[in-house]
Length: 202
Ligand SMILES: C[S@@+](CC[C@H](N)C(=O)[O-])C[C@H]1O[C@@H](n2cnc3c(N)ncnc32)[C@H](O)[C@@H]1O
Image 1 (cartoon, rainbow, N blue to C red):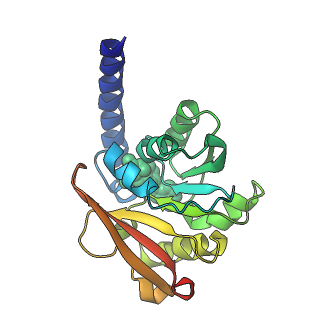
Image 2 (image 1 turned 90 degrees about the vertical axis):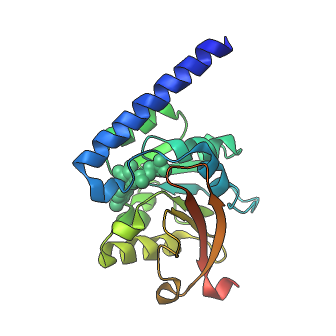
């Protein structure tokens, strides 16, 4: 019944909001946000994934409570093609329960090539990141971005959102080009999507 479904979905959103806030209170520098991303932001990020016809995996970094995971699946990505990296064990286990058929790896996005190699993955079609990159120290940022472009194909993108106005990473210092994607007002706070590719791809 629609009324029951919508009551269930409101309850789940409230539970997620509370869980998110409690994880933020434990590790603000890792969560980086006090509330999960909106469906609108998740779909805007999913829309930036090129339709490359390959069946290479799509990687999501920092799955949280699964808002972006949900949007990626809703946009038509098969669960078997999606791999989510989440460092928080509690959140990783929640994601596993929620998204049957999606590979959820509990680990540090700074070790991306190594984590994926353990699952036999060496090439990926896109990386969609919900990580709070602006809060990370430079050495972790280097590890994450270099790791992403080690496994991404020559023209494949890293897709990241930010609450700020400017690019959340300095593209030139990684040999990347940056394209500003849509601003999503239906998110708390509003967020902008950024798309990074190797400079040699353009
Ligand atoms: C801003 S939340 C985003 C959650 C979700 N994607 C969303 O948009 O609602 C950031 C998430 O990244 C995770 N995270 C932070 N640092 C990480 C790291 N080094 N490796 C993997 N996950 C990390 C946090 O535990 C948290 O779940």
